Image (cartoon, rainbow, N blue to C red; front, side, top):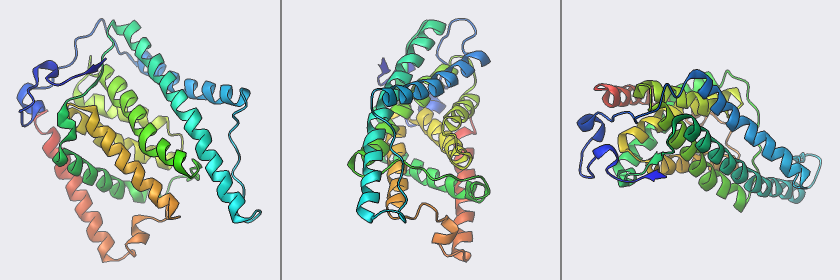
Length: 293
């Protein structure tokens, strides 16, 4: 199911498979994917998660409520967060596996093919990983002033070992296989690469529900989708997604999730300098990546 190296004739030694080979679209049957197909795929993702959550509750795995730190002692409060982490570690992978299977068979039914993700070893390139990580952080800095204006809700994914496993392992693997390996690949059957990256990023954003998180997910999806095409590999995006989630989880653990980059950097000229550099980096990376597309 997962495509190996030299997919579409890309050689392992190529410096830039996108420029040298044009990254041809996957042959497709009929007009797939249409707008109704995209809506159907989004509904599959959303409804499957809802159904799994309800099923888990029916089977005796209810989502525990976060206790107020002011109303209970600290041990009870932390204990409740650990239980939440354990619960998500059960519900999340089950729902994502079912989403993956449902999407795979929907795409196979509509298109007659079941390709899942490109997996070149180029995805382990240190340069691609480092450059992608800097780009991810830069775009988040650039859009932060806008996210600060959007409604914000606390992300209650718990703490503890299983919360870390869910955030750093489960989420990157499943989400990249689904949104880059299935959704983006499906779009490549019919549309231009830039359109595919934008649309798949929009779908990736819509499943995050919270407005501020949706914006961050959208711009992060743009970077991840571009890196996926550049490296011809889902390995690169899984690694980047994992590192990004590890950083975010570390901030939550340190109770810094509500602090903006402006606050962390003191809101001084240092912040404005970092913001300007981030904006320039994003512009150059965008131009360099898509100038020949």
